[in-house]
Length: 457
Ligand SMILES: CC(C)(COP(=O)(O)OP(=O)(O)OC[C@H]1O[C@@H](n2cnc3c(N)ncnc32)[C@H](O)[C@@H]1OP(=O)(O)O)[C@@H](O)C(=O)NCCC(=O)NCCS
Image 1 (cartoon, rainbow, N blue to C red):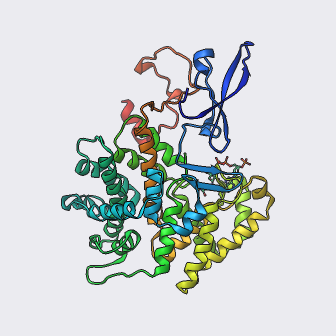
Image 2 (cartoon, rainbow, N blue to C red):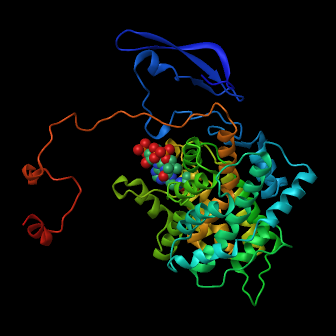
Image 3 (tube, rainbow, N blue to C red):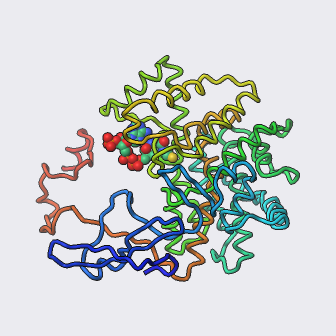
């Protein structure tokens, strides 16, 4: 049973088909969320719980982020996201998320210094970018490069002091941005830019993305503010798919680089971090095809199409995602400041309006999520769609690091190892290779017809 969660005096009673009655302790979190602690269930009864997709499963205790999905509340370390968005830089947010407190001026300034010191990639490391084909997806480059960085940066793979953790955390937060920009430059065949020591975090990223050796890129204050907001809104989101992956890998005591590289891979999918790219593709399709919002939503509601309204819906939020509200506002401001007219913003607004008034979405509590407006912001900043998820990964890095630290610092941590309900074949008799039935070949395994005769001869 867990040490830190508050144990109420209450118990839940479970009656099994055999009539056996088990008392299970009820635990309570800081915000009064309640859970039935089933840790002793299998030992007492032989039963496990089945929760496909972990819809009801608390996989851990965590002090980092609180979400109330019914009320649309998101807090990092107790601070409401709206306050953080108004007052914090991404780097202060990262310090808050990782170390649990807002940094003092000295802590803030020292952390900025170590970020700057660790921003450049080792010269021989830069060669690895040439090993990828020109059109390699930057997410594939990012995950591979973060893993490769471990051998340069943490060769013995051990973090054995707070100072060492601080250096490694700063290195990852700083270099992930350098790697991301380098992946982009490689993918468009332009020279990789060095970071600049006189620029702050967000400006430096934009510089590495868009400057050329013969021409400096100078972002507007609005562009910098919009990207700062995007990054801090993505800094953590409790036990989402990629963060749970990081925790899973970390629970086996894998090093920090390997754990966050796994997080990058998990983030890539269109149901998770890849959704912002999918939203832009959807808005572009609607714009180019001349479809109306109603036409598109009719296709979504026709379940046989398998089409989803991308950027809508969330496993945890059953009302507005507070990040979506902040980004919608930022999107308007940025486009106005840059005098950009993007018809996809109007399409997004119309889709939102029509969907929110439609019973299909209302009855399923589907609201815009963080990805619905973020793609328009990134597009206005000049960031191409295939880089969207990469920029999300830069933002999520503090959260992944914080969750790795939570596991690493907890002496009671155990390896994550869920169980399953096996539904495959019962034990069966071995069939000799030459007696195997042709009608009973492996499902889904295809041998081209023209090769079949040759292989069986
Ligand atoms: C985020 C998401 C993966 C959550 O999935 P989930 O919690 O497993 O929810 P489910 O897939 O069980 O969906 C519940 C119901 O709503 C429907 N639904 C969920 N999201 C939908 C969407 N974006 N468009 C249309 N229908 C949707 C499902 O079809 C299902 O309907 P049913 O009960 O009639 O079968 C899902 O909402 C989604 O695919 N959204 C689009 C992708 C996206 O924006 N991802 C970014 C998340 S930050």
